[in-house]
Every structure is written in C-alpha cells, then in structure tokens.
Image (tube, rainbow, N blue to C red; front, side):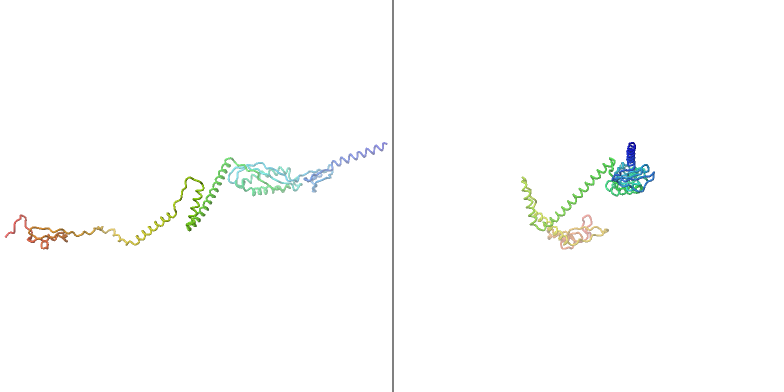
Length: 344
C-alpha cells in the first residue's frame, strides 16, 4: 500500500514537473510576428516563424517583433520655404520591419527613431522647397522624404513604404493674398474667353457681310426676315431700317463728283513759276479801254475831236501843229507875262 502511494506521488510530481517545463519552454508566435531568441543573452540567428516555439527553460528568452506596416504620424513642423514663406507642415510615414534581428539589436526603439528622423527630414525638405511645390507638386517632395528616411532605416532593418505630406498650414495674410490672386486669375481667363468669342463672332459677321454685299437679293431677304422677327414680338412701334439702295446711290453720286473734280484739277494749265525772292513785286493792272470824247465846238472854229491821251500825256488837240489844234492859235513861243503883244 505504501509503495502504491509512492508511485502515485511520483507520477503526480512528474506530471507537475512536465507542466512546469512546458510552461517555461513553449511559446506562441502570431502570424504577423516573428520571434527573436536570445540564449544566455546572445541572439540566435534563426528567426522563429509563427506557431508554437520550443525554448530551453531558463536559458532562452524570446522577443516578438511586429512585421506589419506601421502608420506613424509626424508632428507638424514649422519652417520657412525657399521663397521666404512661413508654413507648418505635417506628414505621415508608412514602414515595416524586414529584419527583426537588426530592429531588435541595432536600435533601442525603432519607432521613436523613425519619428525623430522623419521630423528632421521634414524640416529640411521645407527649407529646400517653394510654396507652390508644397501646395500643388507634392509627389517629388514625398519621394525626397522617402529617400532621406531610407538611408538610416535600412541599418535598422526597416523598410520605408512611403511618406506623404498631409497638410500645409499658411498664415492668414498669405491665405488672403492667394485668394485675391486666384480671383484675378479667374477674371483674366474670363476676359480672354469673352474676347476670343467676340473675335470669332466678328470674323463670322464680316464673312457674312461680304457674302450679302455680293448678293443684294440675300441682303434684302435678310432685311425682310429681320422685319418679320421684330413684328412677331407684337411691339406697338415698328422701326424700319434706312433703305440700303438709297445709301448706295448717295455713295455712288459722291464718288462721281469727286472723280469729276479730280479730272478738272488735272486739266487745268500749269501755273507760272514763282518770282525770285529778290525780284520787285509785279502789279497785275487790267488794261484800260480807250475813251472817246464828244466833239467840242468853239465859236468861229471847227469842231475839235478830243482823243485818248498820247504818249506824252497830252491830248492831241492841245499840241500845236496837230490836226486837232485850233486854227489861229500860233505855235510860237509863249507870250511873256503881262499880256503884251510882240515888240517891234
């Protein structure tokens, strides 16, 4: 009886010891984890896969490493862009562990290390970029951040999946300036579109006017069509346009008068050459018509005919010896004063 009790106690002790051994040596690794085993403080090169893992009690220690993609937000960083604009930029980093041994041995806390490197890289990339690139051309900036993070992360057994800029915060004054700029740009585009439409319309109208001017019947038809359209609106007053034929007649008559005036100007003889600057002025005196005086009757004498003054400025009748000179009036020398006759 005592032997049986001893056997049962030994079996129970072995069972308890086995349970304790199993509790100390068996570990479970999840599917998204990898196990790094340390034996007496030295890392084992074999990476334990997901499932049950047998360890040596007391000698082995396992550390589970998550190999999922980790999303880490980067706190907003304030900086000055290359075009001297103060902005606040935040981003997000996606990474995962590809070498659990390096991620465990080479760095104390790889998540904190990645966060610090990402912040410094973000401030550096802000200073090298312009505001327009941060707002509208972020893909090159994201690639630049990824390259800046890849260099230290590879030594830690970490692979950077991607880096993206989330938001760019601008000062209020800069927001107002950008709003005014956007409004001015929209107004400029609207004016360009309106001007282009007017240009196209004027071009089409000029072509239509040329066709109608070549075909008067088409012009009349268009005029009648316009009158019909205006009359269909039931207005109380109907305004008819001025007759086009009358305008054409006036235009043709004006052109003919101008042509006649030009022809008369062409047929006119050439004018005399202008006198020299030092020549005396020439008076244009019209010719004097001859003057015929009536006969003068002198008692006891024949009638005298007074003609036009001669070259000496005296009438022929007043010249002695001339045909009109009165008879009995000598042609001798003039009498001396006193009225006496000739002295003997």
